[in-house]
Amino acid sequence: MRKTILALALLIVAGSANAQKPGPDPFADALFDPQLVLRNAEAIGLSQAQRRTIFDELKAAQIALAPLQVEMTEPALELVELLGQTKVDEARVLAKTDQVLRIENEVKKRQTALLVRVKNALTSEQQSKLRALRKATQKGDGDVELRLPN
Image (tube, rainbow, N blue to C red; front, side, top):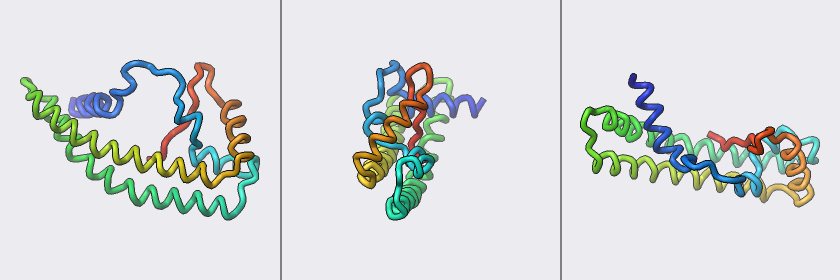
C-alpha cells in the first residue's frame, strides 16, 4: 500500500505536466540525449575531444544532481505520508508539493544545462546527422525515445 501511495504521489508531483498529452516535444527536437550522441559517435564523426567534453559534462551533471535527488526524497516521502491520511490537510500537501517542485525545477534546469552543453559540443553537421538518426529510430506513435540523464 505504501509503495502504491508513493508511486501515486510521485506521479502527481512529477507527472502533472503529462495530464494532457501534449504534441511533439520541442525540447526533444532541439536537444540531443548524451546517450544518443555517444551511441552514434562513430556515425557522426565525434572527435576524441568532443567525446571527452561530453563525458566531463555527464560526470559534472551526475555529481550536481545526486544531492538534489537525495534532498527531494524526504519531502516526497512526507508528501506521500500526508496524502495517505484519512483526512488530507490540503494546505500542508500544497506546501510540501511546492517544496518538492522547487527541487525538481532545479534538477530540470541542471539537466537542461547538460543537454545545451552537449549540443554546443557538436558541429552543425553532427547535429543534422543526429536528427536523421533520431528520426529513423522514432517509435510508431510519434514519440521519440529520449531520456534525460538521472
